[in-house]
Image (cartoon, rainbow, N blue to C red; front, top):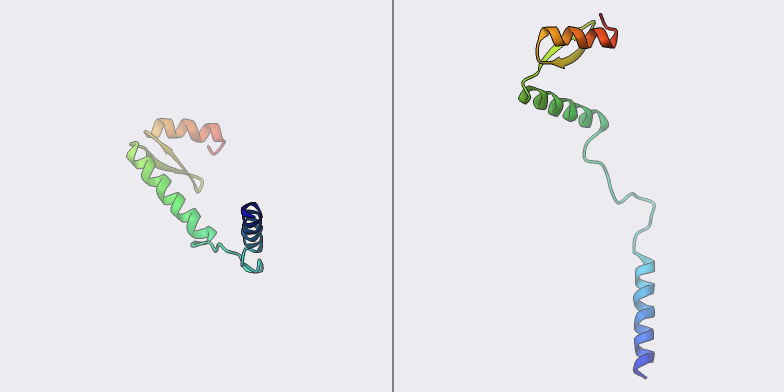
Amino acid sequence: MSKMKAMIGMAAMMAAMAYGGTSGTTPAYEPKETDEERKARFAKAEAESNKEKGLKEFFYNGKSLWALNQKSADKKAKKQGWV
């Protein structure tokens, strides 16, 4: 008889797990920040990281790049085709 009780208990647990209790129509996860906020946070973190590395930001035709000095910035901009 104990085997039968164990089987019934297992069946009851499986049924409870299968039911889940959520309707499925509403998402369980809602993002805390928008894509724009996330992009701004990543841009700020990248700038801080580059400054910690000792890099400076240079601008060419409205675009920016990070380099150690003006000479290497000119080389990078030329490679990118901005100059």
